[in-house]
Image (cartoon, rainbow, N blue to C red; front, side, top):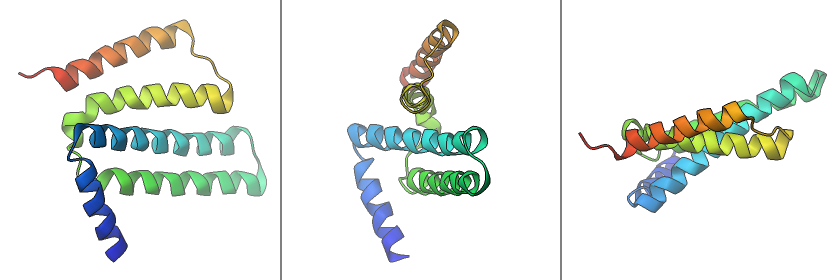
Length: 126
């Protein structure tokens, strides 16, 4: 319990700066994408015990993602737009690196809308 409290305090200090908040969001997006990738590997590229191990790895990564993001005291509602953009970008990079899947024209176009929407959500001050 003491370790968790120490981690929460350190993350709170990190997210007190814009660069620290950005770093936390990038790492959270990476963990979320990796958790998805573990499940994809288990579903489509493994069987038997290897499949079970991929699923367990996915659960472990998602637990780390959740603990990391939720213990950082990031105002997730305000930062949702930039997080969605980061998730999209990290997911495309990992799809290319891990699964050799290149984005198609519709993904590029949809991604442009995601980026514009994320910027609007993040930067628009009503």
